[in-house]
Length: 239
Image (cartoon, rainbow, N blue to C red):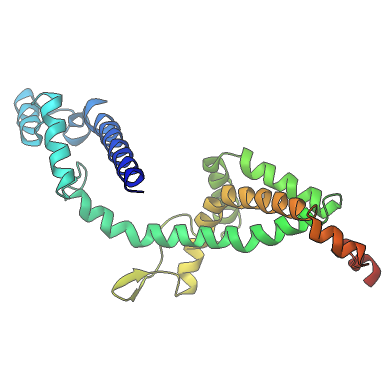
């Protein structure tokens, strides 16, 4: 057990190290932040001053060492755009991110499990086939395209939902949340639905597969041998 914990811990450290390299390369090595931060009409002296202020004049390995040392101590650097600590920006936006993720997860669970059960119990019905066809679309359609279509339909054409923002927030345990108001839900429902589509499609297929597998188990065959009807036949007899 101790060997397993040590091995998994070393793997986690290796993954974090690789991710730190990827993040550093994406931020510092690819492109030039100076081209975004200062006026294109700035002279060479102003550019050199900005480069020296940000420490971009040092070798990449020196910059990476400083970046890694700061990350170990909880310092993720400063935002080039806002000129504030990056960790503060992350914590400031964390409640909205968690709220969106939880809402998407709830949508996927509340809809995915019943639809998957229906498709598993009645695989040859029109509803079951339609559910599986919809799950294929959930896997296939790009999320960014679905988001654009949702904005086009519900924000631009119908005007029912806002296309951006979070809406009014309420303090709950000193954390700003927006789901306690109707206006907050109007801002939340569309991005949460878009984020939930892939998870919803995956959960439908997993639930359907589990249901179909359970129907082949011995205890189900024994129940049917004792003249207990299946859900489909029970619904047909009820009609």
